[in-house]
Image 1 (tube, protein in one colour):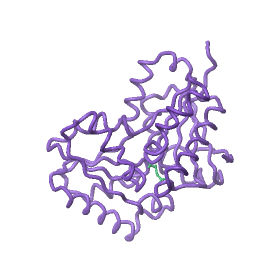
Image 2: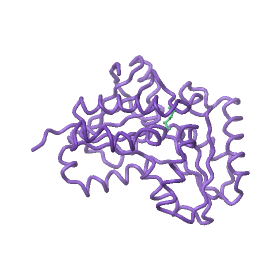
Image 3: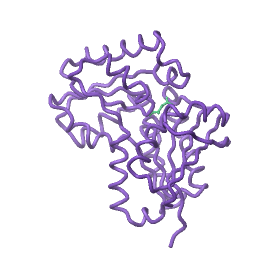
Length: 274
Ligand code: DGL
């Protein structure tokens, strides 16, 4: 039998913990190793090359710590780095390891949530600029009308813990209004950034109740379960102790004090360098 290891989960900061929380809920039997590159977050406005380099370092780190499967739980990194890593780097490192993202699992489902056929995506500047959502949605739902809105203030407000301030509410309402005024038929908004579930209630209070606001976590967890069913060779390489360990590139005590809000469980992080 091949050596077993945890499922790696990576994000620029704390946002990926909203995905990990859903993975734990749906697939509690597996071990998980989370890595937050908190010292270099946010990635949202960084260039393609920088996001690719940082993401590559993080994925290699998780592989070196025994993971065979890594989920890039960051839309910005999924949009800017995933394909290159999958096609260019992975075959050189180890062709039996796998890296999956969060955009495809979301775009395979979100079109079927909309009655009007008009969907809005809120995301970081990097994700919106990459056009990954439009391209992926066109594959699964070619008729869907997609509007995107970059919200560059949201991640810094969340990472810095000031997302309930009046200033934060102003930016959330302003960006949502911009999105909705670009297409009044939008009936579904996808939160295309793993940080945004933290402000889901603020986003919901900024939209009419007829509009559905969708977080990615449950979709990613559902797709991972199906993936592991389809790939028993990978499933056999995932250790099953129900444990979660966390790595951060920032101070561990800072990570632990902030992570609970995103993850809902206490963490005991270890600081590393990438
Ligand atoms: N959670 C990341 C995402 O899903 C945040 C990006 C950032 O670091 O700006 O895009």
